[in-house]
Image 1: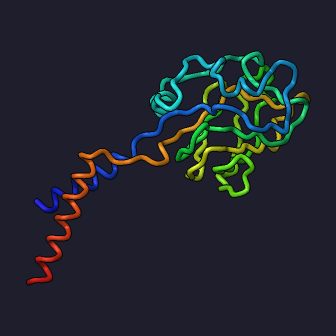
Image 2 (image 1 turned 45 degrees about the horizontal axis):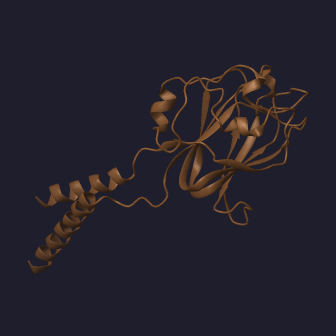
Length: 214
């Protein structure tokens, strides 16, 4: 019985670590690479070129990507930097989340404008006075499907993408769309889960007392 209670408690604790949802940034707080013409950086976060949209903060991240979502081919639905090839873009998630993955879609007509080398950092503040380095990555050039990058898990509201270069395009850097895999930063177990955890811990404590008395 005690083992069963303990197992239920463990299951309840695991259940509170719910599967992540997909979140679009609510805004871009800074962009040192500028924007070419009307190819706004806002198009990276507005889902305009995606073959299927999602509800930010609600749609399951893994399920959504497994459905084979692609991005419209062409510059009209993405962002082009202002004839620069390196710099930083800071995304505001709108609230603090536990962030674990980053997904990016290409959209450029010339796919050699796609992001090549880049890194990600996270922070609770937009000035990144205190930040967490979330990894170095290599982009993809020859597809319009999603590419998912595993980040160092951290709790953050802001994510900075530092772009090093593209794949040789002489105009600019291009991105179709980006999003993040997150869970709530302050998830509180439901009452039923708390009860199971309490029963499991009580059972463990009772078992230890019996062993000591023997």
